[in-house]
Image (cartoon, rainbow, N blue to C red; front, side):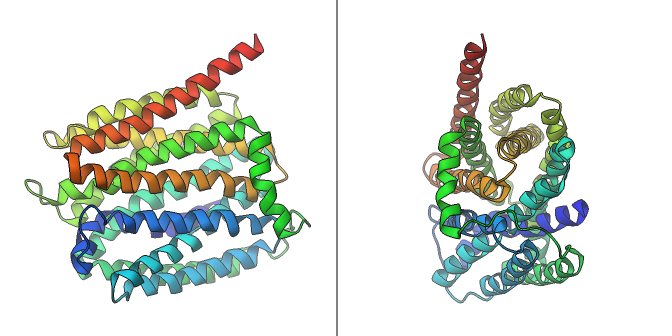
Length: 385
């Protein structure tokens, strides 16, 4: 069941990231300038944030089997709409819907935390979250191959078919007797989300880290296609997508972070990973001169982001076992907000300052995350002593 969840998560989350290696082609297709094309990613993340706030908490209140299957099938319709968009406004609206429905990933992650035994929760969440990262990074390669073969629209028609298939598969394999977690009213659940984060310091810290690390992550992956597709590199979409597969190696290596959290090493894992995140931008800055060094930086960045993300989720699920869906919904809003900020900041920085501006922006987000963790860690040590 965990493997099926992981595959579904990979297929679903890829829908948010297919556009990133295609931004130049989409911009040309709809005559959108380079400084504004980041809106394609930003609007998708806005839709995702709305889904996190208003759809994911339903996982605590309704039949999760029906909720998950419905989201998968509606995603197929939204993706087909993007693939057939006749003009930019239709494209933008479709991307919002794609993001809104992609939160099926978080309903599945919360369900995983509910079904897993407490002593294995970190491992289980780490496995399913690995599927998420596989989807994020492999999406770029898949999008590149399909776009080179049939244009960017083919990517979204392919994904629509895949989500239809996954929806039918989930309808067949998901258990029919999943208990409903809460009998509260929907309005009460929505109001409880900010209250949970106000009461629990660990939730506030981990949400802040999610915002900053995914702003850094999105800064790289949104802007990267722009210099790589231009002279002197002039790489194809397929070749650019290979960098996603390189990053995948680092992300999968970080999947053990959940087990480290289970062993009580969450703070050490977080600190080391954030330090690596800052250092990765030094290697990423070599892009115009040394692709091999740049690739090492990509691997380091993806390793660091995944390690912190898995650790974050393990800790927030342990904080309130009775509210997994609303916890993951609230936490991932910060992930989505950070991704949206990184997307628009990176394309704006690149348009004005080039790749150096992108690297400084990403490094600033990463350093802010490290400083936030260091301040919180020092404060907790003083409180214990």
